[in-house]
Length: 271
Ligand code: DGL
Image (cartoon, rainbow, N blue to C red; front, side, top):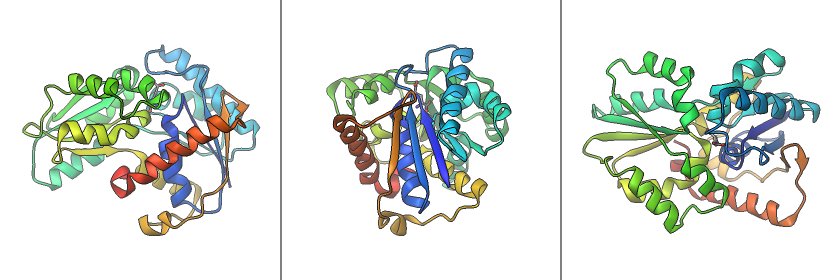
């Protein structure tokens, strides 16, 4: 099956990496909308427009299923996108439900911090989700738009990223918070930095593996467990930037490093 992913930029490669190792024998397309990154501070109408344009392009390349590997594009544009096509469309939303369930199960009734772009945090989709799954009002919201541009510059371990995140998380400690949700696919690359700043006790939860499970489920595809997935041959991925095929060695090497970074996070990278 030909499966098309898109994001505003590199964030979605974190989900794609999980998908290609867990779902064998498919054809993969990835479009990073580099002409319009970042999405997270644009209007809902603009993002909805880019969302449908990206999907239209992937469909024109033969995609038989679309993964919106971006929480922001999902929040702003997935309804319009689903009206536009009959193929399966898998979106992403901050993993609030798993966070509530996990922290309930651990018996720690502490707070949960949901980080995402300002658009994801203000859209009705997230408010509805929180209304459904957080009856005890344990969820707090924190926008981290600065991480998107830092990620695009591959500045994951930079002093700039460390200062930005340390400042943003000043009031967040394991005394009060049981979990932090990474509600933007760009944030997943910064897991080691979140861990360093927050310490070992705060659970870091992203939506990547949940999205991959949903993709497999909706498309009727088999899904491999962790160790089998790690042993998978790395399949071909066809890369695009805003609909233009990527063939230059420098960008391909960059995308290779991003996949390595995600694989290097192992199981904990895909809670
Ligand atoms: N990666 C996107 C997400 O998951 C947003 C990045 C952006 O602001 O462009 O929300």
